[in-house]
Length: 299
Image (cartoon, rainbow, N blue to C red; front, side, top):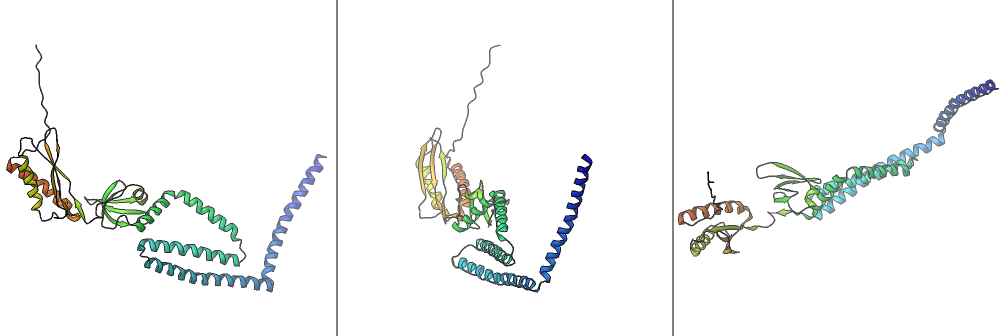
């Protein structure tokens, strides 16, 4: 009985193995018959021509639409970098829709294809989450312009002169000529200090003199110092005033206004002239001192 059962299984396996080539052959023959059938061949050729026409006409329409979008952004005075980037994105999105329409005219099921593309887009978005954050921040920087190329700013934990603003990062140059590439997400997610935003800036200095010095003479010297410098603005007027009676010094605040481009040069010159003027006039500049008492232990 077992032998008969094994023979029957072998026979069944042989029959199924013989059926597979027949089924495949029948499929090939059916596919060939569709192309040899004049009606079906004419219908397929019509679909192909329709797909080609949809694609060619769609490309022309996409070119016209992206051109109109660029003109609208130019009239709205959108930044060149942002307008170019948005135009490219719009172009590729519209071309994708055109291709899907052309494939649908060929009889391709675009529903599953669109679902696959959506899932792939979601996966790419999750993988590039930080890059998308930098992109969004770059768009905000270009639109709202918290700083421009050439401004000296402090942002993203660094300070320097802005050389280039792109979609994903900002290129900055430090005072010692180092180049720093800062992600836009780090910039827009924190505080931004733009030192070049205003045409004028105020210099804040604290100058201390000794308690034994002539207070009026020190104030008169500091006042003359800021009034005789041609780079210091007359309006607003500079301020020289006693701000604090410290532990070891009388502290003056010296606050002149200058053009932003002259800030550092005037600050450095004032520091030098204050020291030289104090030395010439015998004014003291108090500095921290420490008394050390040494006690000798008995032998």
